[in-house]
Image (cartoon, rainbow, N blue to C red):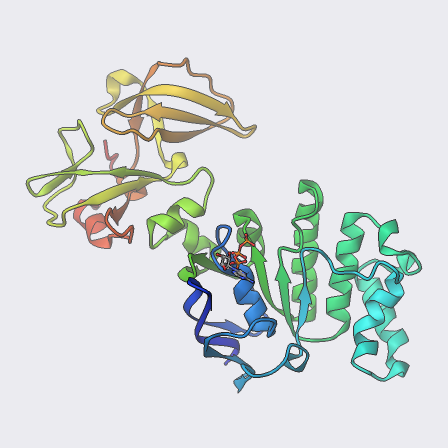
Length: 367
Ligand SMILES: Nc1ncnc2c1ncn2[C@@H]1O[C@H](COP(=O)(O)OP(=O)(O)OP(=O)(O)O)[C@@H](O)[C@H]1O
């Protein structure tokens, strides 16, 4: 039984379709990330679930009951914003208790709830401070505590960590995930940061221009992308995409005489290769060569940009450790056939038939 369901939600701002027929289910206790580039509709979707925006059509259900016409407070959910939205003139204690007071809850429970939440969020020594006397991470904890104290099981978060530095963001990711699991919260979490989504979420809803591009586990988004959009949005660097040339019934890399896909009758397909799946080998032993354009040392590995004859876009190769290659140097390339993805060039959708057309029984090297 799903905890939250969206049924064919549409929302436009004038001519702009922000949400285009969105449907999905979230199971109780799941952590869902809404991920996608700027302007794809993440915040609009979250605000529509919260009841802060109303959908043009479609319906929203919490635990099978239709909440589409309910106000935000009637929906009984918690929300954490990027800006934290703390009251600057209230100390931490008053900020935490604000929601309970506003809803007119029984005051006799306040002390116990405050104790429980301030302990959980490690805010006990800070209860008398004003928000301006707190660090960014501490303010974030208060915002989180305010969401938790309400005891709502559905929690919505809109880019809650984007004001924090990289190190603090990483530790807060772990804290949020731990609290969500401990309290059994069902979480819908907006982010444009794929690392955040991949490391925190059970499932990711990847949005592209108001539509769901792929709704899947982090593992599947990376290893089993259903489109070029997903393949290039998830993973750093983005997957290399090389349009193939059709000659007769076979499909070739430009300038290559050996086909990549044999006896395949679709017109335009593209080869997708992750940078880490390509090996640099000696030119003498390679059937495909490229020229080094630049290298970028990243610490654990080095990204090598290579020019491949017939392609305007450089091919990126990721090699472990620090490797130096001279600009203009020739390198040999190879990869395993199992590392190849194929997509229809026209609409970017995955072309599984082409994978079957080229996959041999053993994992021989492709080129
Ligand atoms: N109040 C509004 N009035 C008009 N257009 C809006 C409004 N809110 C959002 N939009 C438009 O709807 C589209 C989706 O916006 P939304 O804020 O949901 O995207 P987002 O994915 O959250 O982006 P970001 O990551 O930049 O916050 C955008 O084209 C945006 O300009």
